[in-house]
Image (tube, rainbow, N blue to C red; front, side):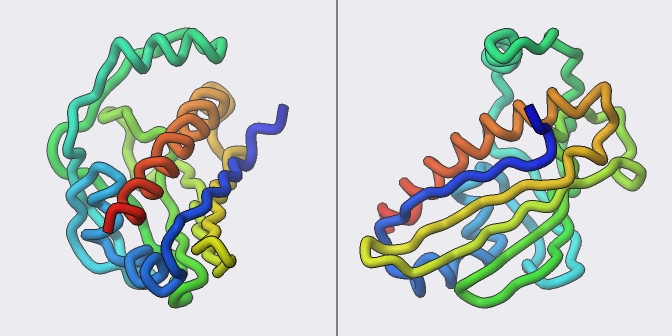
Length: 171
């Protein structure tokens, strides 16, 4: 199995202008993603934020076991964290940022960690908007962390795709 790229497609039953206007808005993005984000999404901007919920360590450990991972130590960041650095925005069609994959480790130095590229591709379709989420660059993640980061983010994008679908379709 290749651990370099995650791809997820989701059909959003809303017209492209409604989705495209919200995708690169930090506050809107944070609402469905489960973070309070500060700052404006703009190329080169570093966005900070804090997680809205609680981390269910038991659920994380149970999932790790189901995908063959040895449960690792969780070092959950408290308070504000660097969420991402925005790469590119093309209105209504494309939005990308870089972040630390599966960043549940307060002991790491974000300035020295390899980041993955997350891309959101939007396209109008008769049923609404097709969104393709791509996360790539896992090959640059240290070997001891790569499979864990890949599998946890793969599961995370499944959940976040559904969060976004529900959020967009309820507006």
